[in-house]
Image 1 (tube, rainbow, N blue to C red):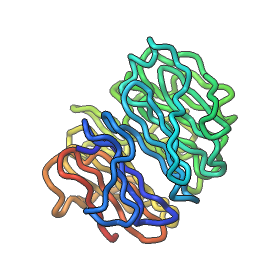
Image 2 (image 1 turned 90 degrees about the vertical axis):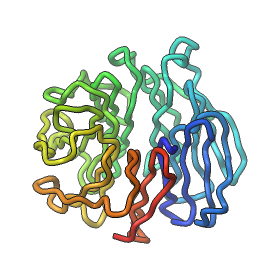
Image 3 (image 1 turned 60 degrees about the horizontal axis):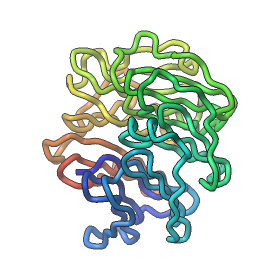
Image 4 (image 1 turned 180 degrees about the horizontal axis):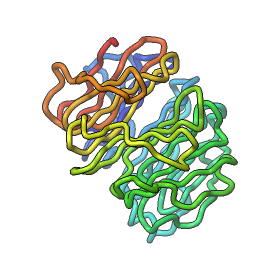
Length: 294
């Protein structure tokens, strides 16, 4: 039962993620029989350095964060208070695509390290009293950082995390923001997926979160949506996953097609597109990991 997934962009054979009650599991060979549990507890969020497959972070419950460098393990959790730790089931985080020493992590506030986890600073106040549930450092401009919360808030920094906007969620439904992802070519274009029923689940902003457009329009299944993936060479192609499978748009959300195919009927909780291999890897909550050449 995976909570999330990442794939090393420098080597598509290295991938893994956090699993419920089964730690963080990684394979370095691409073989299903070669998974190794690298971190214990309830496995949480995992991010891999896009330039180096042997440099990655894994998390577990209550903001526990571990760093792996050349397979050396070190706990590098932010110095959050016990009260904050106890309120955060999973610390969501993202690595600066232009400087892998910089990582942004979410608690009730935003935490940042610029020295690969050796020390952390709280760079925001408590945002809306709920845990951060999505973190995105823009590929196209890493000064642009977006975070979402369980209460449905969205907050933005335009200076790498030094200062933060108020809540930009506006017309969004007010449910947990499960993923924020920017266009690979434009840091002001950002997509949000929402874990809700009876409303739309995928939104787009083209002005850095100032305004939002519903690109679902009730055409996608009425279930919680969990993640989005965008190829760098095709930024108008959007893959989204939900409790009801995977859907794809090749026109930035103007139309959608079902890509679920032979995936099992369990929640698809995460998606990662691998640029060099042209593959889409999906993490399921109950039926392991799946991969499709697209």
